[in-house]
Image (tube, rainbow, N blue to C red; front, side, top):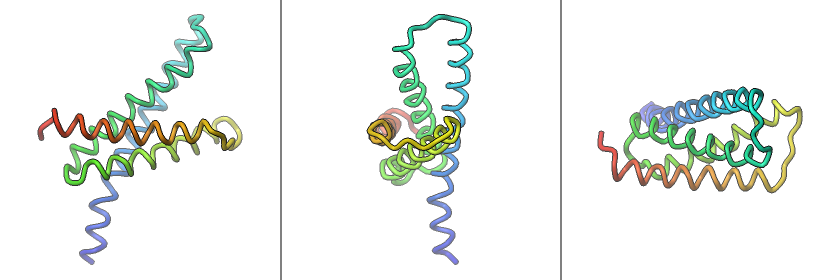
Amino acid sequence: MSKIKSVSSNILPILKSVLIGIATTLAGIVIFALVLKFTNINANAVTYVNDIIKGIAIFLMIFALKRKSNSQLFVKSIIAGLIYAVLSFVIFSILNGGFNFNITFLYDLIFAIIVAAVASVILSLFHKN
């Protein structure tokens, strides 16, 4: 019984933080879509803005993870970044109407893991509980 409690106390904060990251990403994308509708921003900027939105969402995700669970933050952040990348790929693939595995997914996966790791280091250095 204590092993199950230990596993749930480690996994639950990660999953909650991933949900915060996904919700932040979805909100950011919707807001950006509204901005695109009413302005004439260059189409080349969309990729960069999406990456900025994802970076902010991942940083907020790791901030939420640090508030819930401070031990082993670096490892948990990498796991959360991995889960975030896979889950966001699945959600946005469903929204686009099909799964398209290409090099972009690999880039997003690496981006999410690196941003999560860097965010955990920054938060560990500068943010005290």
